[in-house]
Amino acid sequence: MSEYHLRTPLDEATVRRLQLEDRVYLNGSLFGIRDATQIRIFDEGVCPPTDLRGAACIHTAPGVKKLADGRYEKISIGTTTSTRMDRFAPGLLHEYGVRAIVGKAGLLAGSVEAMKEFGAVYLAIVGGAAALETLQIEEIENVWWEDLMPECLWKFRVREFGPLIVAIDAHGGSLYQRVQEQVAERIKSMNLA
Amino acid sequence: MATIYDNLEQAARDLYIRALQDIPPDVRSALRRGLAAEEQQNNSTAEQVMLTILNNIDVADQHQTLVCQDTGLPIFNVMVGAAAAVSIPELKLALRRGCERATRERPLRSNTVHPLTRKHTGTNTGEGIPVIHLDFVPGSDEILLQIAPKGSGSENMSFLRMLNPSDGIKGIHKFVLHCIFEAGARPCPPVIVGIGLGGTSDVAAGLAKQASSFRKIGSSNPDPDVAKLERELLDEINRTGLGPQGLGGATTALAVHIEWAHTHISQNPVAVNLQCWRGERAEAIVSSSGDIRPQ
Image 1 (cartoon, rainbow over the protein chains, first blue to last red):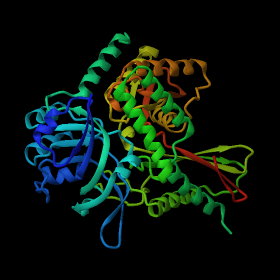
Image 2 (cartoon, rainbow over the protein chains, first blue to last red):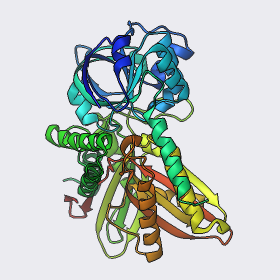
Image 3 (cartoon, chains in turn cyan, orange):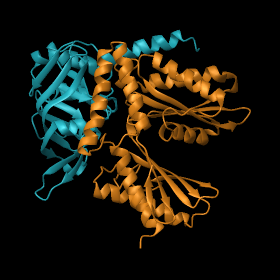
Image 4 (cartoon, helix red, strand yellow):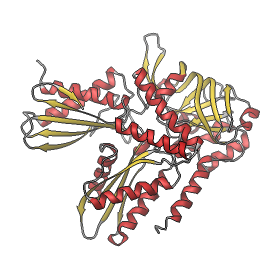
């Protein structure tokens, strides 16, 4: 197990180096996306108004307070369940060049394959640990599609954002899948059938 | 002078915020035991997850911030003393106003949307929300108010199965473990597993919610047979190895709580409701004389 302190944007060689269960801390920019954001991009075919090549994206809908000058103050920024948005992940990689998805509960087999092909990773955050995440997000730098509030496209500036655990690597490995297989095996051995 | 309804509104507002910021002591202790278990078994990733959870709780304490960004849907249990001079429709309105004030004043992210149009109400209240369960106790003139602002990652992992009576207790074990497997990492394990046994389908689901979201960790069901099943299921669930955040480890559940009701000869209903590691809840007593005593 290794520990990496990475700066965005991320390149392919950097993410290919990461192995399952490695620890990652992110510095630089992190883009917030959720169900409605990706419905707009992929189902409604609206191109994101910012360059996502090499980006790290997080599945979130932050709690914020709008200030008089139009900027947003962070109240509570945490992470939502990624599996709900699994179908959008391959498009984020292949069409827009995203290199890391941060979330909780993982992605399914098709996304694992897309991460292998394109060179991207899934970084597991500790779901529910929003107090810590909010502290590590220095500022809300930008927001697009405010009509989707709180599921806008957000740009956060982060410092030492983590610990994140490499849970899907860029070589077809998935920690979730490995654990699920073990769980199924252990339940079977309990002879409840 | 503040009326009892002003006090109920204030208590509802304060409890909603407190439940999201201040993790109950029994949940904290269970999380620390989870960390110790992972350390003992040298589960490095699980240990990292448990450390981060406990660190996050400390950060929320120090900075008075929300533990998780999911401000949930507010669910109240209200125990009204039979001697309390209170109008129930007014009490319900007071709790609703309390949720709206917490949302506006803290501010809290609002989660309430219309199920078809997905249009936001913006207040964390709406049709049927807050959920209010009322009960009455003899003798007292006080009102006990409990809130669990249930988060959605865990609530989406809810299950109901009308088993056959012939499936027996073994069928219950099998179904509960199936639920844990199906839910996987999504409900933010380590979870509190709430199980409703018996009743009708709606009763079983309601009992499962009470078990997951309102019972203290360390409590066991007063019925010895039910308490035995709680212990057995906790052991089985933790032997699956799903672990914290579904990344593997010894701590999949912090507790298994079962609530039950009698059922029909031809029924064997089992409902499972999961609560995430945050175990958010808070309570206070509102007295007729006007004081609010946080519990």
